[in-house]
Structures are given as structure tokens and as C-alpha cells.
Amino acid sequence: MTNRALLVGINSYAEQPLRGCVHDVLDMATLLTERYQFARQDVTLLIDGRATRAAILSRLRALVQSLQPGDRALFHFSGHGVQLLSSSSEEADGLDEAICPVDYSWNDLSSFLRDKDFRRELASVPDGVSFVWVSDSCHSGTLSRALTRGHDSRPRTLQLPADLEWQVESARRRPAVGPRGLSDAARELPLALLAACQPEQTAADAVFDGRANGALTYFLVKELTESTQPEQAMLALTRRVAQRLVAAQQSARNARQQHARDGHRRRRDHRSQHHRPVQRSGVRQPEQHGPFPG
Image (tube, rainbow, N blue to C red; front, side, top):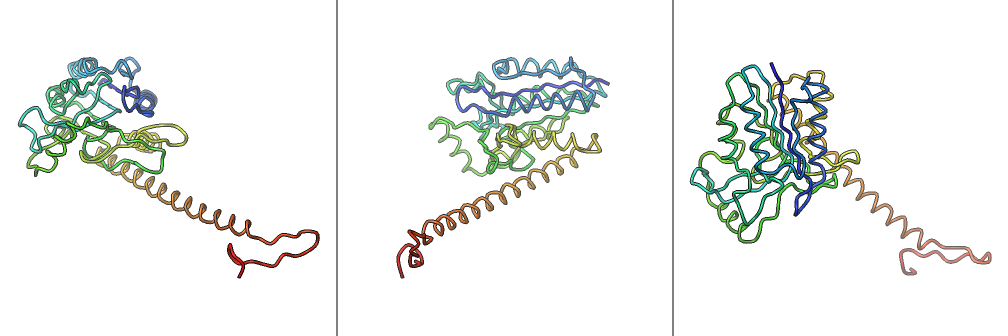
């Protein structure tokens, strides 16, 4: 049995750069080699400028072709995700979910990696291979909405040019029947997908413990590092990571409420201090209530 992984993380986009994607894949690489016995030579990283569309496809194809029954494999992507008008009639909602390589271009929509590209590349994963696909980007599919507030966060989705945004919004208004998105592509393939959010939701590039990460990757690594059962069933793992996300959201919400209460208390104390009577030359000033004398 061989363990293999392809880890892709992109911070240095030409527009709307991110902060936590490189940390995501470095954290995953450390987890795989130190806890899951992946050999370093079997873990491939594509980071920033090296994560072109051609390079991702080439390395993914090589990964799939190297697999034998009994092997374990992981494909991890951290970066921007988008929805684009479908280039075919296959998508029920008229939209493709796509990830953004570092060399994407709005002037060449074939420069994105769409759900149909992954269907094609991953369809040949051999039977008997345990293949996990982690997508920490927007519009990717299944887990739960990632943190978007309270952790110095920014969304992992690109602002589309106005003409493309109009096309996508028009397609979203049409009723969808049938499969859609990366999660549905994964259902047709011999693999498990762990994704940051639903197609219409936003994944978060956030700061945890003073360091930028994707919310999904941060809590996934935390769960797998701290768990006494490193070999967890995917459904159980998904639930545990979702629970961590929900708990973090509640903690962030409580922190915001406490911050608001503290701010109110500071303003109240400041007003009270500002209008407190003072002693001048031993003569006591008359007390005042509020900003004006009674």
C-alpha cells in the first residue's frame, strides 16, 4: 500500500490575493507525513506561481495513474473558487463550479478548472483506492458554511467582471433540476469530497491564533491532530469538523457581543468620568447629572 498526495495552495493571485492557502497545504503536508506515514517523496506541493492550470492537471493525472488498489490518496486545493456560466448543457443549473489556478484569466474562461475537468481526470481512480478530495474554496460543495466573520476573514471567492456576474446571476435565478457542482461531480466518482461550503456560499480565509488559514483546513487539521482515532470514517470526520466550525462561529459571535458590551461600558465610564465634579482650590463644584445642569 502506498500513500500519495497532491496539495495545491495559492495566495499570490494577481487580483484579490489570499493569506492562508499556503499555510493550509504546509499544515496538511506536515499532518500527512508526521501522523499518517506519507513518505515525503510521495507528497507533491504546488504553491503560488507553480500552481498553473497545466501543472495542476498534469500532477493530478500523474497521481491518478500511479494508484493501485489498496493505495490511499489525497488531493487538496486551497484558493479561490468561482461559478461560471456552463460551457455545455450538462449542468442542470446552467453553471459550472470552478477553482482558480494562479494563471486564470477573465479573457480566457478555459483557463479555470471546472467540475467537468475533475470528472474527467478522476473517473479513472482504480477500485479499491481510498481517495479523498479536500476543497477549501468557495462554490465547492458539501460541508458547512465556513467562518466569514469574527476571525479577520476574507472570502475565497473572486469578484466577477460585471458582464460575467450578470450571466451567472441570471443562471442562478433559473430553477435547477439534477446534479450541480463539485459535490455532485464527486458523487459520480470513486472518491470522497470534503468541501468548505455549498455552491452558493462563501469559504473563509481567516486568522486563527494569529496565523492565516482556511477555516475548513484549520479545523480539519486540528481534528485529525487531536483525535485519538486518526483513522476516522469520512461521515464521522465531516460531522466532527462541522461541529468545530459551529463552535468557533458561536465563540466568535460571543466575542463580538462581549466586545460590544465592553465598548458600551467604556463609553459610559468615559462620559461619567468626563462629567465628574472636580475640586479646585478646595471649593467643591456643584454636582451635575448628564451633560447639562439640572
